[in-house]
Length: 387
Picture 1 (cartoon, helix red, strand yellow):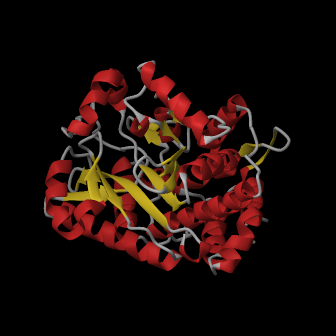
Picture 2 (picture 1 turned 90 degrees about the horizontal axis):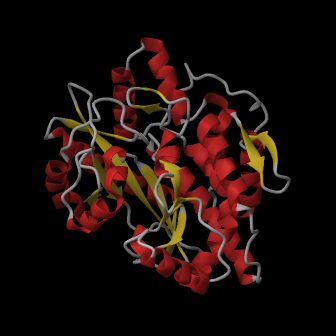
């Protein structure tokens, strides 16, 4: 915890698509072999052979994180191109997914394939996982309690998976719904201590619902192999800038939670049923919808919740000179739409998912902030957190 400010690292998952057909390609082993000389252990496979994962080292600044994300994406783009492929940052595949999904042969996953069986048949989802440094496991668990009420807002901000099985799902983040089918996934329970967490983890393993701590897929968890708390609620964003800004926004939430944990506050015990309902609303409607205010249990515009989030973490962002960049990206998202709205806008213009794949692949490679020329203005965002 040098300088009393935690580092942040990111894991991003991407689909591999055929550059000419725009369909997902079960080519992860080929791309990993080409990428590892440049990236080493900063690249790995996933359960599906359609996917690869890029990772950053721990970073202290927003600029440093953005540069690392660009480096990792750039190396993967180059490796994929040598196989006639392109990486695509989308929460769900758009074209060509077959079921059952072709699985990775990694021995790490084999016991889980046996345990979860047909749950893996359609498991092809790409997320953004943010690791924030914490001093110990007890702190990580209690920090998770403070993050729970904010997770639905992070779902809405990152929603980038409206299409599933080559049609519009009606949701902004279908990944959130698809991932929730696992026995231990989605919003985490409230924990009184690390001992409570560990006891439940043991009971779940004894019940045959997990293969150990690393298969606890809650959206906030203490990392089993790193001194971090891991936040897993978000779809992978199309652009580097959005990914970096969401990561430092999450870090700021963790810093505020650390302050409260050190003051003896174990966190608000939001009812799990209400939290799941809030997830569902934000996954369905995204930034243009309404979410459940955890203070009142009433529906309010998600844009208002984003404004509350920014005000909550403003001291942290200001202290570390991140507030202007965070506000600029959030203003753009709230005014012109996030990933789901962009995918739908591209599809509406040409009626082709091939166009959506091309747009996503270009944004994944360039990391550019999307232009606003064709983005619909979301309702209720004239005065937002970013103003």
